[in-house]
Figure (cartoon, rainbow, N blue to C red):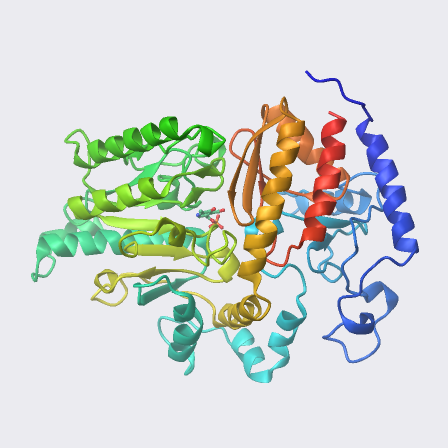
Length: 512
Ligand SMILES: Cc1ncc(COP(=O)(O)O)c(C=O)c1O
């Protein structure tokens, strides 16, 4: 182990707090909204309501969670399980890249609510969306979209969601959340697969009867092939294709569906090309064997894959691997489903991550959610179910979320945020790589595209310590896999935010 100058964590915390409090007193806050007036208010805002982004984290409590968060957690626990709650936020005071907690700490957020906030907190343009009365009515009159959608629904779907659809995927099925997007995409695949077998004939009486008894042939003996380390949701169907953490699966019945290994690359990529190429080849061979295997209890109707495995450790795979997967799907006449729930919406520097792979044509289905605010999937024409109610639930999305997405897409274009992701992302990645060199015994395998970045720590305990200490100095990051830290900043993250992070990251690492 390299010897380093060591500060106890509490000391960093104290000195950073004092430093940032001094900075705060010296009015180093940058009001991003003219004169500190909240764009939503008509009167002068009270000083406590000022919404602005500080130049760096501001720490008010001795630790995070602070006393108010701890008290609220106790209160919540009397009503609802709260084991996953880290702290309570004050969303009125959060702004831009900073989340404010109830103890008044302003924390630089590089995880953005599990990667769901493209424009950070309280973006002035989003605050205006529901000032429009028409939009407010869309918010309060939430329709059962499958039955009585509003008169503007076809135009909205077309002008908002189709405007960002992956090339070649003209159809949309809207949904509410990430898991139900994948869950219903599986159903669309099974219907498509069975329709191919049936040809033009209708389901038989035996199929209809047995479906009501959860038995074949009506309940079809089919599967979706997924990958180890993949994560596609928390509903019963998607859990059978999720393989990141036993705690999410324990005690639930599951389908015995085939699971292939995902490539595990060595880094840096340019120095490990031969190993990584072999990894691609071996993994593709395994997929091919699993799809064609007679040992497989149920035929594979489709493959689901993340363009970068998110929860499973930010595992990347090459263009060749994804092209190979698509070829297998075409050869075996099964569906190719790409889960862009976490990678979609611009964070990798393109609107969809699979666009980086130069595939020969679009995937058959692409699921989305998170940064797009509403869930669903884009798909080819043949995945539209012929009969009503086959893919259905009460809400099937939420028009008010599309209003937000419409504005988000405008801001991404107006503020050239994809360019920012590419430029600032490259700067961020370079910074991480240079820190990795400085702390070789603690960090390795910096990786990712655009803002979708990760770094692996020496072991899980070190990773956890780093993440907790970063929070104490006002930085929120995420974890992924066994020992990686994942970064998912908003698309408005700038070089100055990267610098604030790298400075604190270095300080934290020096103290380990
Ligand atoms: C790629 C991917 N798919 C699906 C999901 C499921 O999301 P949720 O639990 O929000 O339904 C997630 C969650 O993070 C994800 O990262």
